[in-house]
Image 1: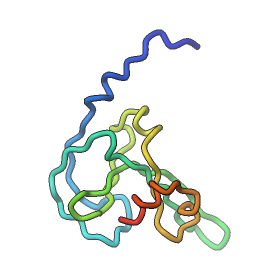
Image 2 (image 1 turned 120 degrees about the vertical axis):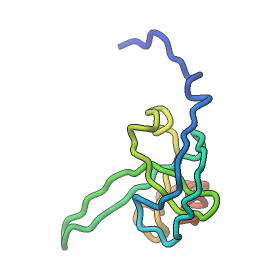
Image 3 (image 1 turned 180 degrees about the horizontal axis):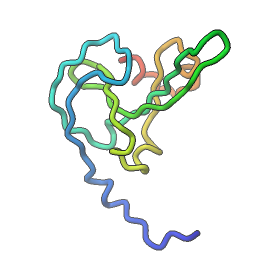
Length: 114
């Protein structure tokens, strides 16, 4: 396979207008319902885990943002976010979770807001 032409200029001006709703994660913070304009640097991915019984669990990634007003995480459907942004956005995880120990220092700082 060969890339004929790569055009990253479309990502430079990417933005998305959303509302802080807190949907997608069991937040300790209450959403403020503020309208927001997101840029690519605002997008984070959250690895989540749900226990399905004694020996079973399911894991998945959610993409979203942490509100600058109330620190509440709100999920955004992944198909709305360009794949290039999904590939380089930082990962966050709740403190004390298995995934938290694998995060970089910057990602741990972002996770403190959860």
